[in-house]
Image 1 (cartoon, rainbow, N blue to C red):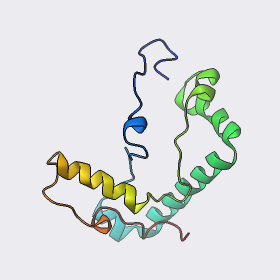
Image 2 (cartoon, one colour):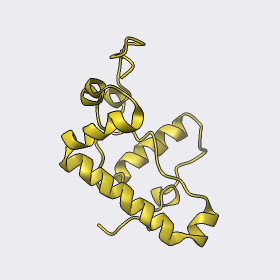
Image 3 (cartoon, rainbow, N blue to C red):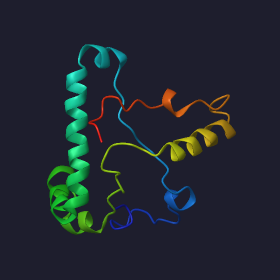
Length: 126
């Protein structure tokens, strides 16, 4: 989007360097998870449904972008929508690669099991 507005130029995509790298996630405090688990599940159900909608109805999904993020329609239609899995899950193999990078860059001391990093128990059943 920045390139379309003349603000900057894309010289490389991080996804080209490390395909499938996950940049974001959804986090909840432990207190919220223990005291309001149904609200967490409801939020995640809605999020997964939005992913499913974006995959099934991309053109219609793009119509919402200008309204909610205040960009021109042309920018919304030219910008990439991430390749959301549709189920809110990231393959363990991808997370293991990222954990390996974190270890290599000394952000973590040693590899940890993926199950210690993510908790899919609040997501809707597949």
